[in-house]
Image (tube, rainbow, N blue to C red; front, side):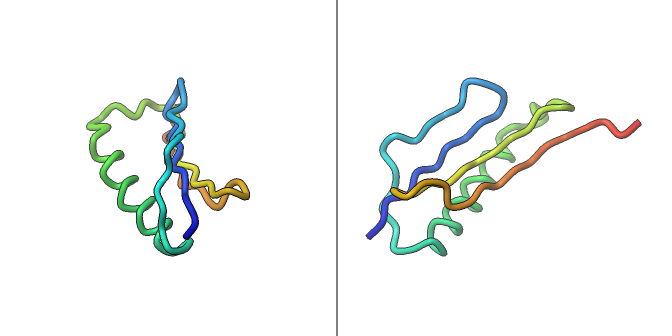
Length: 76
């Protein structure tokens, strides 16, 4: 079964997952990523500043598989 690595950046420094998680396939990696992102975003509790991006990149042994991004920008 493949090992997936869940890296998070919110400003700096980036949090690199060096251990990873063994999951059956990309669908399970996606499910895990969306679940973890939801929890992490709720824990920001007002800490996402305008002009700041938040990102989780999911990699496997071959490289990046997908990423989830959140950001805030001022429109006026």
